[in-house]
Image 1 (cartoon, rainbow, N blue to C red):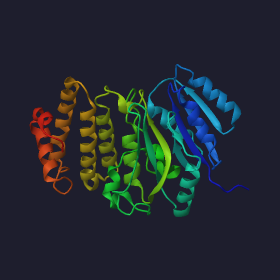
Image 2 (image 1 turned 180 degrees about the vertical axis):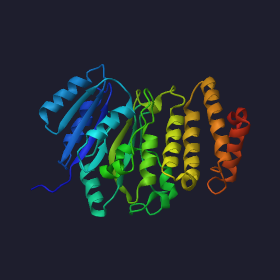
Image 3 (image 1 turned 120 degrees about the vertical axis):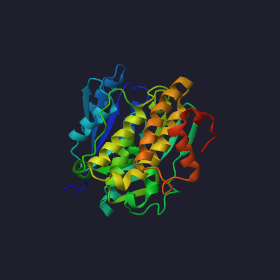
Length: 323
């Protein structure tokens, strides 16, 4: 009898015919074979559905779900509810993974009884023809089992939810799902933060096992969707309030919101979009000051000053030099 636990791999798909074969080949070729591969076709209009049916026919572990387009969050929640595995893995359909990824992650999760185990990844930027390897070097005790709320720096990392395994009963127990906002992006942000703050046992492995592709269609490249990050930060605030942990986590929430909003402001091109976003950021910064979430405990004097400018004189922010 095979005692290996089942891993449910969720693969959200939308118009990815160019990259989908490489993605699926990397999953079905895993050295860890106890996989349930749930491919969620979110109303693709290109050759994606045909490719999925082709792979479903040749590998019994693959299940294809065709659904009307409803966005990333709603699509992923369908996959979470369908999944039968002990662990949940996520592979974006324009990415690919190394052959030993799930064997490495699962072995670590089983050995230490982890809620979450995460590996490093290579960011492959097709637009800039540039690769970058993620590092956890600034997270103290890298590689050891830890509780994220005891190590605040770990709460500030990029969500990168596809570079991890999550124990399914941990997600269910804590009501951790995706925000369902049609047409939105960056919906991994609130999911990743909620998972980290509720986890008791986490490991960041040094192994580089995931290839994250940034291409022309990636949401990170989109100049639009101005307020999507705001929706995610609002979901984080809602969640930690609902679980009675706002006072404990409000400083961490404010700090990560600052990084997220600064990144979003910088990526927006036209000044018209920057001004619209800054108005929203200013309102939220004032609220965070009022709630006591922005203090010297979490922010340097320099960043406190910039946040004061954002809250009270937002029109000046564009002229302030890099933080």
